[in-house]
Image (tube, rainbow, N blue to C red):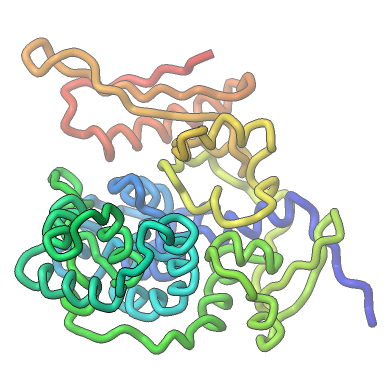
Length: 368
């Protein structure tokens, strides 16, 4: 057997950036980008707008808002048990695939509190209630509590066993609204898939995140037992510099380690940072502790030469009467050269125009 090619950290970095549409902006529709990325984590409801802006040419807020309001895309708990923005087709296909993860999370987090409860009956009752109107978890708990008094985890049980879509205006730029839910089948008017798409899901993961190890695939999806799925696929194998076996699609591009990587602004919870067991292909362990907070927030970051190099945030200061200023604060982890600061400032001005175009004044400040 021939020795497997070793892929360096920079080769893996450039491959990931290329597949994540971050080496250049792409001239594709938002829905096609969302499907290519196999969804976008959407705990922060508006973070996918920045994620698409930084990846696509000419992306506008209404390009995503329209997908949500016309039901071409939805927000639903999927990979890792977290809320993802996905196309309607992927919602129906992928939710049954990740159901074992959601079942496991329900058992480990709420199992004892649900002892003796028939989850099938709870699901049926919840579906009937949500057919009347979309419900928040608080409303759902209150209504289900009339039938199952003394239980305090019924809405969480429903979230696990029923595919709950968060309906607009939640997630629509410029609108606001509490998270309210209906079943995906009701919202989309189509049934769920049969759960047989695990192999296709792995192939799509590699197309968007590869090359990757089985552990990477499991961290991204939250599923276990994917090695048997990988064995049934036609893949090529490599190794990283630590000897870990990596898999990839035959013929998938591997840009050179010196491929140009422009500065980029990533929103909160960007999947680039969440989809591998070994995140050193984009971020050092030291920097990871500053990006991943103790309360589960994944901060918005900047990329310099393809790697996480700092944080950013937009704050609005002043008042409408006196004149509000939107300030983009960029906090590098290490000193930046003049050319890099200029590139970040230029990209930052474009970000401010996109994310805070309604502010009468806009400013950029480097911290440190």
